[in-house]
Length: 329
Length: 294
Image (cartoon, rainbow over all chains, first blue to last red; front, side, top):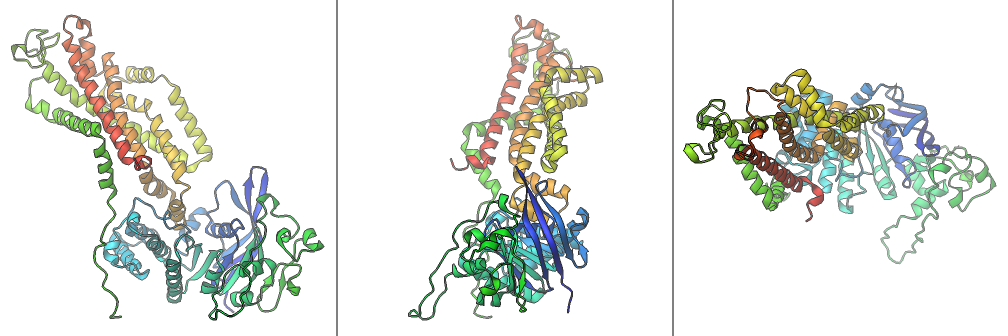
């Protein structure tokens, strides 16, 4: 068995609030294999983006910090790595694309220069070589007329094109891990599909592992092999995508799946009712309590859910669910 | 794939370049356009005037207090019989030069302080902003007089003295822009691609923070000219150079007998500073995205 590329062990991230600290990530462990595509799913504010920022070493200064746990990348613990070392890794071995392509590019610098800059910093390419490679990368992310578009400014491009440029920047140095933080949320559906196609193809070509963060179950089904469902800073369920979608072992996962509409080929087929998950995510102050944080919204709630944090229960097929009633579901 | 549609080389309508857009906005401010023309004239006069009108401004050429236009001297002569025209043209050089150089000094100090404070936050910001406040509460004219009196009234020292008392506004503006921009996504994205702090500050954030800084520094040129005039009026200037303030200062005793000796350089200062302020206002229209919608 190959060594995992990234190994997250008992990660705990604390966020400083006006009154005390809240664990926005509470005891999270997972592994990422080389070339694997892993998805984080969950509602807003459940800690998906924080995990990504922690891996990048970009937690908001003075507010967020890694309280305990390890982030082992290629045998090296990132939580103890120096800032200089982290800078070498960022953009070179682990890179990231963001949710909002309209604001993720520097508006006063040409896109070519923004791609070339990464190449110059990490690979020491000359100005000319970096510029040429920038044009090639634009071609690789399927922007038409790359030779003339390299000298465009971001405002001359559409949202989808800008996201492609972001992907080009992220993949410029052939990173081992690409973190995509809701890469298609701000784009319309046809463009979303194109971006997914692009990411899939680029992954097939380069063998980059992808960590995708999303709240869109459809995107997960399309992109990922394994998924981690997050809820209120904790892992709710982890496992291969097919199996989880087929038989979710956590009520929250079931809720997420049942609120995605399905297109039926046959209109006479009986459709399942579209449901929503009632209630809202608990506030940060309630994070970290010794109980199931989903209990207030859960229809399977029982006494023990409110008394103790549910243990992880494995199912032999790689699926692990943190729920007291996992076996019964 | 032979059936791929041919993509046209140029997009049908390209978004306009920011410079073009800024000029469009600037042009709508008529006062600013007129002021810009006046300013260009003044600058050309300062550069070429002393060459074309080669009279030595220190030379006694005629009887004192000859009124403008009489005896062939367009702007008359001052209390020592020196040619006012030559003095005003030469003074323009000094006034504009000091104005520009002092503005540069204060922008350099202000941007550095503001950028460091806004970028690093925490203790760095605390210390730097306290220093800024210290300079803000100093009586500026008095402080620069002390500097000039202590270190001598040479051109560089006057420039430095003016720059050192007027950088606080730039520092505050720069800091506030940095505080805003450092949280934007493209800065995080740049961090995520491993950009070093110094580059982040000066290549990523600063270019985006420039518009209000440009406007402020344009206005600063005007106030630096006024400041220099004030200092040289008080005699704190290099006696071997002519500046507008110095002409006013040296002729001030004769203001009742020959008011033109004071009025003419005064007008020169007034027109120049007004032109710079109006251009600064136009720049604000052109560069401030919040005014774009009008």
